[in-house]
Length: 216
Ligand SMILES: [Zn+2]
Image 1 (spheres, protein in one colour):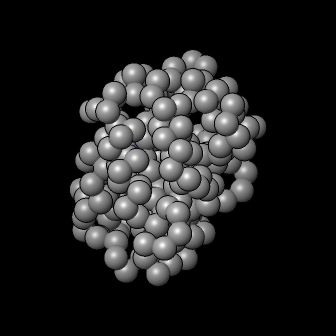
Image 2 (cartoon, helix red, strand yellow):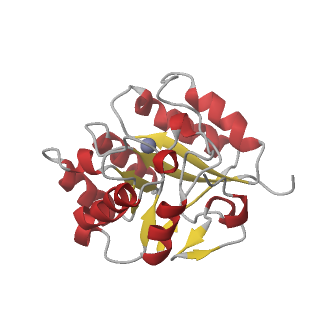
Image 3 (cartoon, rainbow, N blue to C red):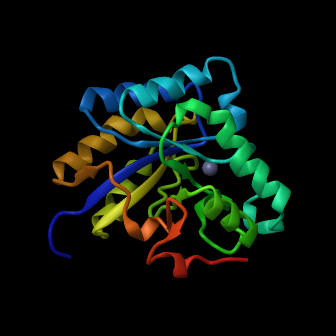
């Protein structure tokens, strides 16, 4: 591999009571990230203010489904896709005035045929969504202490990683500063851009990585 690896950070499944802590760490270091939020979380008291804060501090806010219940490729159902994608986008409302970002969810971060069905893809194309996947999942929820070391090793082996973390109260986010320190010590660059490899649709248009998407 030539050049130093690059890392784009994303935080899924919030907002939660861990989100303010994550925002504090990112603000202190001048790092921008993407937050893919779940509707049922966003409806909880105080959650919308956290999402507003994330936007105000320069982060990208994306749609991570209304209920995060059944991955959209499992049933491949039109009503399900519309609710999970479009009803959630309506709930986000003016929190996301520009480009609409959607991140599907899979069991434990696995990208397989369960992730998206043809009907979900239709909704994403018609709604001109940018679909954001990932290529690095250090499983912070399972390993709240050790995930930074796992993740640093993983991103060191790839030119550009889009890392999935979770702004959830698992205890894992207490190690976010140590993780960022370790990246900095290795000269790994943090980016706010999204690598094409992880973006099969941009504003509803298939990219080069669309063909690699495993569809049910
Ligand atoms: Zn998720």
